[in-house]
Image (spheres, rainbow, N blue to C red):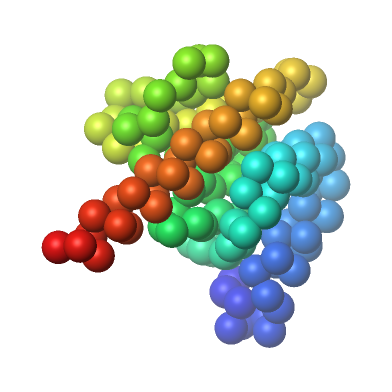
Length: 134
């Protein structure tokens, strides 16, 4: 399902996905979305790959995937980010991406997550700046 298929905006599709989940995963995805928006008020929400929320600022920041036992935030350039709080706990073997798997009932270090999101946005901005000066 794409935005063209439904006539809905990406934020509306994300709202619908959260409601459709109807369990802890929807609540957690909604909470993570709120943290993203607090950290980066100018973030752009998209809807990709048949139902995955994606957040952009000067390039892709992260996705919000839902699975049976986890909500996964995959950072597009996570391997290039410092993670002093050790939030990354999945997709650690890749050269580019890193992810955080959140499970039901786990605490979220909101300050550390916001710092990681802001670092991802700074990395995207610096990459864009370098590309424009070439």
